[in-house]
Image 1 (tube, helix red, strand yellow):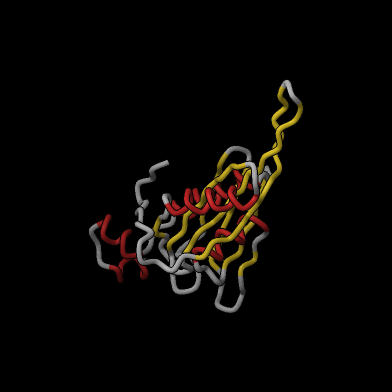
Image 2: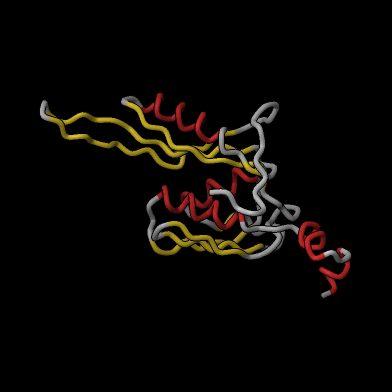
Length: 172
């Protein structure tokens, strides 16, 4: 899932915090009965623009969470922020889940639910409005939120790509 403006980051030296989004008990029916296991989705971020997500599966909850954290550290990316919010509104989609995120004025807070809130808080966004539509499956909602975040571009990059001054971007 390589997007044009994705910038991968190495986890070394970062103060990462992890948030558990969802844990599910899964069942595999075998000839000898039912085998129970656990699946965990975790968001890892430094609350300063770097975030990643991971999935871990194991027979025990703690092992599943540990695997998910390790998986998330392998997919850390840098997200452009505009002070405490995002640079512009954006839509993201994955599977049946659709997520819309919009910048908000300072003091608004994170207006988001469940999986979207966990991702946005781990990135370090403090003022944002969001709407999640379609599927509420946490796997797809997390991936749709990441899709929206990957599409964000800051004004400096836009000016550089267009070959114009930063003033022209703001003044139109």
